[in-house]
Length: 40
Image (cartoon, rainbow, N blue to C red):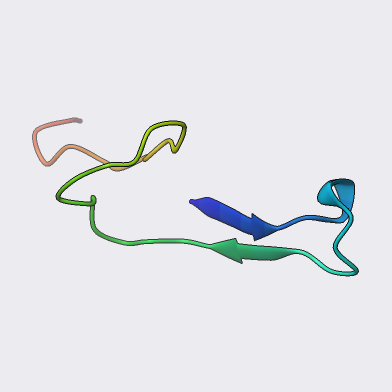
């Protein structure tokens, strides 16, 4: 999940991007959430 635009940052609207696959090279400060295939 990446918050590209936020009202708290002074933007007039919010923009949230949800990536369905983990990034090959994650960027610092960005959290990724995904389900493990072996998790019950």
